[in-house]
Length: 290
Image 1 (cartoon, rainbow, N blue to C red):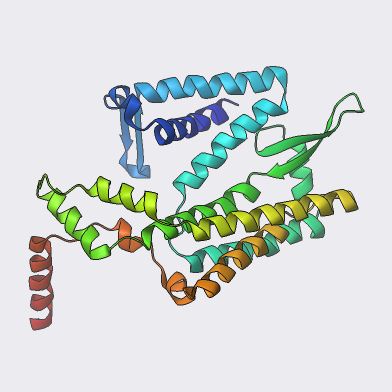
Image 2 (image 1 turned 180 degrees about the horizontal axis):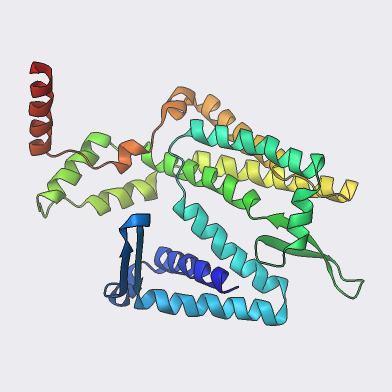
C-alpha cells in the first residue's frame, strides 16, 4: 500500500501542475533530495511539493484501507490513469493502431480463453480497477469492474488525437523560427503566445470523433455484459470504436495519408541552430573526404 501511495504522489503532482500551472513553483524549485546511481540510471529528485503530494496520496490510500469504499478506490485509480496518459507518448498513428490491434486479441484471449483476467481483477484488493456498484441486495454490494488498461490504452490514443488536432495546425517553419529567436533571447519571439493561440483556435475533430467512438463502444460493452451476465473484454469493443472513428474522420476529411505519416517527433525535437547546422555539415563533408 505504501508503494501505491508513493506512485500516487507523482499522479497527484501531475494533476496539480496541469490544472493550476505554476502556482506551486515556489515550493517545487529547491531540491530536498538529489540522489543518483549511475550504474542503474537512477535519478531521484524530491522537492517540497513532492512531499505534500505524497501526504495527499497517502491520505487517500489510508481512507481506502480503512473504509474499503469504492469511492476512494476510484479516486486513486483515476489519479493513476491520468498520470499514465500524461506520461506516455506513442509518436504516431501506426504505433497506435498496432498497439490497439495486438491488445484487442490479447484481451479476448485472456477473458474468453482463460479465467486469468477475471480472477486477477476480482482477487486483488487494490486500486487497479474502477468499481461501480450494481447490486446492494446482499451483505456486500456487487460491483462491475473496469480495468485501468481499458482506460489508459485507449486514453493514450485519445490524447494522440488531441495533439494531432493541435500540431497539424502549427506552421512548422514559423514554429522553428520562434524557437531559434527565443533561444537567442529575442524579446519579440513569444513562442507560448503562438502555441496558445493555435490551441484555442484549432478545431478538435479527431478528438471529438474518437471520444464518441469510445463512448459508443463502452455502452455496447455494458449492454452485452448485462445481457449475458458475464465479464466482457472491453477492448473487444473499444478498439474497433477508436480505430473506426479515427479512420472514418480521416477518410471523410481526405487526410488519411497525412494522418498515417504524422510524426510527433518533428515537434518534440529542438531545431538545430545555424552553428550546429554548419558544424554538422562540416563533419559530413569530412566523412565523405575520408
